[in-house]
Image (cartoon, rainbow, N blue to C red; front, side):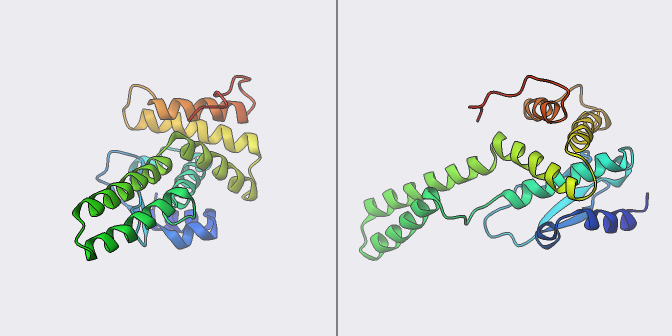
Length: 200
């Protein structure tokens, strides 16, 4: 597989927002088939690293769905989306500056702690299992605009999850992958048993 040709093909599969925010990078030395670092608040580009030697062992639909899922997860990470936690971070930051100007050490510590706690909560929300499940669903929606049916897209993504584990030499799926796998089985119509509604 010629990596440059495959990268061009994958760029066509991506949604426009994915092409603007992410970048596909060949990384033959990595053990994972596809990987991406968790995007930090001020990061401009969100690279997706692919080992094309391993990538070519997947079918084209599996590759499409894996890429779309990764793009949806990366573009779904929102650090500057207005909600209560961003407000608390901002308030804590401004309060910390005011307290520092007034030389109030206790006020600076409290404001800084408040900002840190809110930032940790934002981090946890973006790293949660729910964000992975949302990325799966978003990837399936985009795949439907690329000619796949909902059930086909879900099947390709769940077989891709299994195939990646085998290619990477893992004995089985991790907990996160098992939850995603069960949810995709329901979407594909292969299982009537979904994950609990209140699962976080």
